[in-house]
Image 1: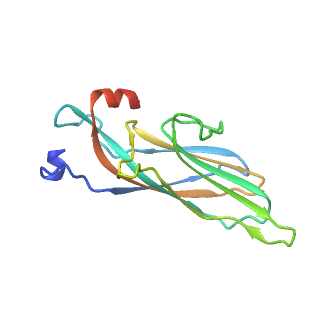
Image 2: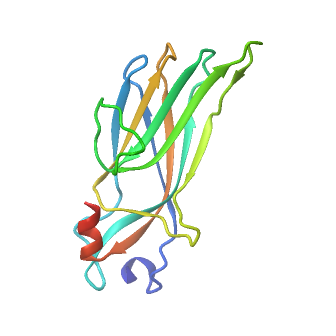
Image 3: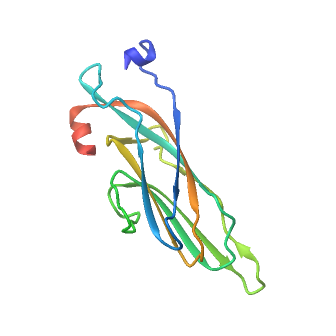
Amino acid sequence: MNMLTGGTDDVKPQFLSFYVAESGTDTTTSTSQPIPVLRNFRTGGGRAQVIEVLKVWITWNSGIPEVDSASTVLLSTKNKGTTAGNIYDPDVFAWGVRSTKITTSGQVYGSLVDCVDLTDGNGNGILIGTDNIYAQISLSSTGFSFGVALKVLYRISGASLQEYVGMV
């Protein structure tokens, strides 16, 4: 880490942005985003370079459908393909759910932006030691397909051999 930070070991947060879109109407679709670390680079003290995810912003890139519907996006360390994942999967580290409800008066309620804070109150996030982050979008009852923009706030960190083996 000293080579990256000039000796301070204080790596500043950075953003990783990517997009996941449905492959068709009301389907489950996954995509991958490579993690920007040098996997063969070892930091001082025999530590592996990993990322520490601090926050995730999820922006639903479509208007609120005027039907009762449900949309879910998951971020995971494993590719789930077209099989819908859930928040109980041990490899899922962030998720967002958007549901739209129509009242009897015809008013539509829904949200378009979610922020998932993965810090523990002391500023420590979730360590990710895989080569990719996988995003999955799953929708039902929308009648059309759309996508989600993701912005991940992370910083480069070092993990001991024991921590690294536990992550991957």
